Amino acid sequence: MTAAPLTRRTKRRLTAIGSTVALAAASLGLWAATGSTAQAAALPSPDHVIVVVMENHAYSQVIGSSSAPYLNGTLKAGGADLAQSYGLTHPSEPNYYMLFSGSNQGRTDDSCVKVGSMTAPNLASELIAAGQTWGSYNETLPSQGSTVCSSGKYAQKHNPWFGFANVPTNTAYTFAQFPTDYTTLPKVSFVVPNLCSDMHDCSVSTGDTWIKNNLGAYATWAQTHNSLLVVTFDEDNSLSGNRIPTLVYGQHVIPGSSSSTTYNHYNVLRTLEDLAGLSTHAGNAAGASDITGIWN
Image: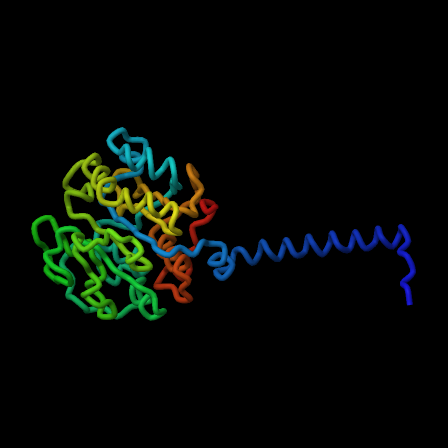
């Protein structure tokens, strides 16, 4: 039996109904995008992410500075600038714990932590539990897994993973062990320069050159190998409201993009977890939003 042709009036009614349904779907989609599942789905799924943590400089001391030609001319120009990125407290050590585990874990100073004294979930323990790989590369660490508090320009206060019993100490590598074959990198890794290279004791120019010389080749590789480089700071110089530089660079980042959304260490942690496809979120990262608006 052949259906009777639709009248013009019926067609108009169906068109109106379709528009209403489309608007409703768009509205539902907008609502869903604010939920954690939709946010995670909107992110890329990189094979490797490296996070480099630098020290004690405000946004205005680095971004736009002629002393940081690599950070500005390559990573910012070719990546994303989170122009309203903030540390959470002072001094250094609690910021590292917040970035790594979503909480300061009771750390309020820069004292040497008792190794393995904490059991709270953190980025590394979540990755390991999910069957993913994790590692840290620590400049001037005397040897792989060394739990020494300090050694020359190395400082354990910048290495929160040693505080957790659920993070194997042998996942803390020396920077000399940083691979030249980047396909062998862990899914997520942190790179922690020593107290000179991270701008703590030495100049912005020194830190900029260190990143270029030691991670510039990886950054170039990341652009064509589904990978990301994140450069951030623990805190500012205590003079700029804790506004810090944070740059994101890699294949899935819109070149030259900038975000004016306010983010902090918890947002960075949440984004790292979701980039890795994790279903768990440590501490205050559970209530934080992902970094958005920079992905292509």
